[in-house]
Image (cartoon, helix red, strand yellow):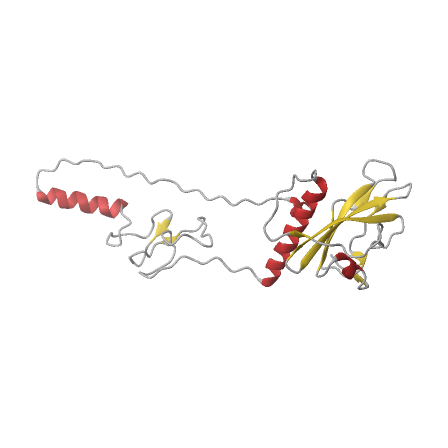
Length: 236
């Protein structure tokens, strides 16, 4: 349940490379060549340098321009910037492209977005929820004040609001326990036809006690009234 009410932030950081120039005093051209060659072989990642078998983070065993390979234990992340393509080989090396989300992932993202918006809407004071582009208030349709969506007669369900994004709807229902003992909320077997269902609390306390009610969020491909009248379907 926490997955639907959590936020994920991806942060990328870059470090600065500092180049220190160390002067040498040389008496002739031969010393200059020797010093330059020694320094190049020890420190340079230029493709012309020798013994480039191990450069800590990168290696370039084939001496290719832009052919440096990222060593183990250093992550190659999807969608690297085009200038950070040293883990590939060859002059025409290109950065890895981030995989395109599948249709199932896109649907799941819509379900999560709608459920999060509905949860914020029912818990926030009127007017405090920031609008989200593409999400609009939806009509519940002709339904009674209390609906029969749960199979447990001890629980009542009252629709409090509905929203849609494209052809996907989410409806928030306040579920209350009328029994004198605690009751579990079975949101996997419901009356109606739903694409997904989420409940904030799967266990309710006795009637009139703290925690005797919760919110149920139902995802459907039609407005609430039509989805409810399409028969019974178990799902989540």
